[in-house]
Length: 340
Image (tube, rainbow, N blue to C red):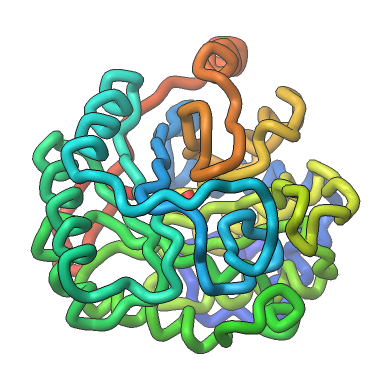
């Protein structure tokens, strides 16, 4: 790394400029991965990966028009609408996830805004039940008020996922039913409640390199950084506006993960959706670039994920081992930490 860039890999910063991030992102790939691996080893056990399990607790009929999402009511994708699951069924799935080695259980609901009333009460029951299993608990439920965030915190929620998806400049090309500031307000409510933040993006939606840099800029300038940064590859689903997008070059995933690792050294960088479309070699490069978490289980909400035996073989071949990660909360205490 050139001398003027060496300072970027030292310590945790929140005052990045887009120009600095662009310099890092555009480094020769092998140099970038090498530097990211150095940062990774300075902050994390080099061969340990956290395994997470993601379940759709309410599926389909979402009023949002996110162009990548098969659960949007705006598109005909064949995804069947399912009402909110029974809390006992969700807790049973959490037990299964724990038996399969997951240390983090994530629940997703296709809502624009978390509803008040009986449905939210059911979600709180789910959170309490999963937390009682000594699992990290994450939810992604749409936009959230400060009061709802506090209630989720009191119920035992570890983390809340709300992805920024892409840069502010490109966001309107993907979604028209909400604005970027809505997402930032939800993240602020989550942080204010003392819940750890899970926020990342999706690659392969037609964005430019500058948009990827813009996404990284938004995430790396949050203070504190998101404890969890999921990097997703677009899963092209027939019926959605992005179904005909060209396949993403997996090296773009590697490059973005490596840049995220350098910019947010203490965060968990999660290899999220799209692994079914990646070769084992591409996944290996993502781990070399600083990813230290992935989602196990046969599905991620409504899209396929590698089978458990495939992941077990990958771990054996790469010499990786699963473990529960740890983060430091806003109160300064350590706790086991947060796909998404």
